[in-house]
Amino acid sequence: MLHLECILSTLQKKYKKKTMVKRSLAPQGELPKILLVGIHAPYNRLPDIQSYYEEFLNLVKSNGITYDEKFFIKLRSIEPGTFITKGHLEEIKKICDEKKIDEVLFSEPLTPQQERNLSEYLDARVFDRTQLILEIFEKAAVTAEGKTQVEIAMLEHQKSRLAGKGKHLSQQGGILGLRAGFGETMKERERRYLENRILHLKKHLEKLEQTRETQRKARLKSRLPLICLIGYTNAGKSTILNALTKSDVLAEDKLFATLDTTTRSLFINSKKIGLISDTVGFIQLLPPHLIEAFKSTLAELYHADLLLQVIDLSDSNWQNHIDVVHQILHDLDIDKDMLYVFNKIDRLELTPEILQALTKYQPHVLISATTKDGLEPLKNYLLERFN
Image (cartoon, rainbow, N blue to C red; front, side, top):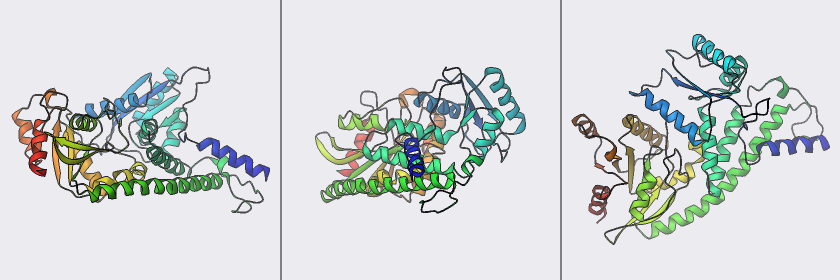
């Protein structure tokens, strides 16, 4: 019985609050040396891959990681066992050996098997895009609901990594008193703990959802139109919300600065138009566990009268960002009226080519959320729509 209590205590400490693998000090007691590997994968058909690399570097920056080396590669094919093909893998191995790299962070999602194989070959700890985004979400979560959603996603990710853990987790302990009986492996015990913890968190999240649903019903009874800001991360949604409602929602030039849905009353020219909500930003290759965990927060979208999709027009991959948002909305089975809000027009020249490309997205407005009178086209549209 004491042995069982010891195991459960260890698991609770391991997964309490911080479920990610913690970045430890290098053997010499110094900060670990980190190598970033940006990958142009065959499935990535972006017109500007450099912008994608910059997004990866911004994710790293948003997570507060200081790296020592970076290496960008283009893959013509994906190796099932390691993701990276042999030639590039040898190049990365050479960098790791010469620079004494402790951790390697890849720009793409990796399977558990690929992660383990890479770690063994490179003799370094390996992290992928999913882990990076999960850590950013954990740091950005503020409310109880947001923290619970992130912890569920992180535990689900951790559970997926149990499947191929080493032999040390496959050894049978033969401990008396466990529900699984004799011969339950450490892996099975750890999986059971994770599943119980996830179940507990989901029940807690349901209670928080009930509170949100009560608030939502009260708003629906008021029959005020609900407008929801959606879009790619860092497109300027929170800045627009602040400018329209004179609020002080956190608006940083940082990926995933906003996680929790914020709703404010919207007045234009002293006339109450309705309610407007800010939502979590999207990004390509967003971890499925996060989308699933944040469904309760995104439930506001199902009740919206209008979606304002905010697009950073100064980003060269803006059309791909729209596609990413459309795909996530499709996955969530959300089909609502939408206005395309092309933001940050003060940062670029509106060439005939850009204006022609915009005709595909109707209706739309061109704005600058940070300049005087830059929001007038949006205000005029909302006045006309909800007058």
